[in-house]
Length: 430
Length: 152
Image (cartoon, rainbow over all chains, first blue to last red; front, side, top):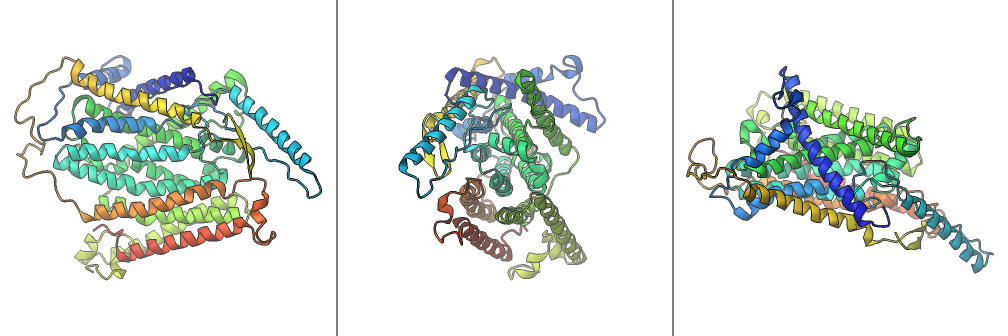
């Protein structure tokens, strides 16, 4: 709502926090159920029908557990870290529109003045534009908005900024715990999060070039009239999805808490509700990023044929569409967790720096050139697929090279699949 | 959004800080929520509290901890942090450009007033960004040859 209303904002905030907390509790249950079905088990089914009360039991258990603050920790940061983790996770949701929100009106162009017209005409043109602008503003203000802070032009950048603050929770928690596992986990985690921040930000630039705004509502409005971004930017979606998986520390990238290596990673020493806050923060990140994927690449609440329904029914349908898309991505998170094994750390780093960043840069270059020379949008679909295919081909070629040379021990330690640096860098042992 | 201003794009809303008030309120509530949860779980509940010497020890898989946990860590993590700074600052330069570069602003006059329509400012910007990305590419290539991305 543009005319800022305290009551409406407070209402939305309370609803958002409540919904997020409730859905996180049930996501944990869903996760356990999915993992159980993947592994041919039943999962939690004792508390309530089908285990539906399990989240309450879990929450109560976390609250009532003994809270251990070991002697050797740095007390202030140790207590502060879970708070930072949950606060940054919740803050990142503040600009995400979770229901049909109209985009802020675009600038109203003023009719340009010819040389022979007088200043009076200019004034009249200005007044005409101003009137049109005021009319658009009023119609915008009459509509309902479903976001905590709607119509912010900074939009996406704000989410990324706050999302990357999450690394502070991890670092503070891991360092202050004064435990070797925690320290290793937190260092790994921060290296991973900051590495994947770059392909994350770069993959979005192509979209921003098209829309000309970082505002998420405007992104959806653009996609409603021009088609979803997944059609024109499939490569960007792939890069975005991988980066987001890494940012949330979900399984193919869960090195910060690799149980077999680091026990619990950065939260090894945490117990009771402090541990609970860390885990909740992680799940909230998952929800937020699922929303972002649905909004940025899959048109948000837009669905062909269902977009023109007016009134309450239309609003409810749009809510359901967005929820369904988000839910699909959350399910993807969970299924991926139980199907793809964990990376090694060198693979993780080489994926971000050697593969995703060049791909993202090439993709950005293609979008730039296509827009500069006014090419049709489907050209970008082709270039996306071609860049990806080219990358895969180069990868396969160099991988077979490095496999054939793997008889020498140095090239086996040198985990670089492209095998390039081993040849070129003078300091390399090979 | 209360007042209107005229820019090259036309009449649009002036920047108003009141758009950001919801975020401030949300921040306060979120902080209260985080602190409240920590406080509640720490003080309010009747929960077991037995401190034993072993429980207060750093966890190292059941062994007595050896040495301090304030370890020296690998220099490569430091290298990653420096690289991140370079690339992230570069990204920050690209964002403002991406927002204004190709939006349909009705092609206002300032775009081609320099050379009488032969070369518009958007052409110059395009070339500048190509040069910018080019220097970035050279730096990236140099770092690759130096073996910075090599994790061995």
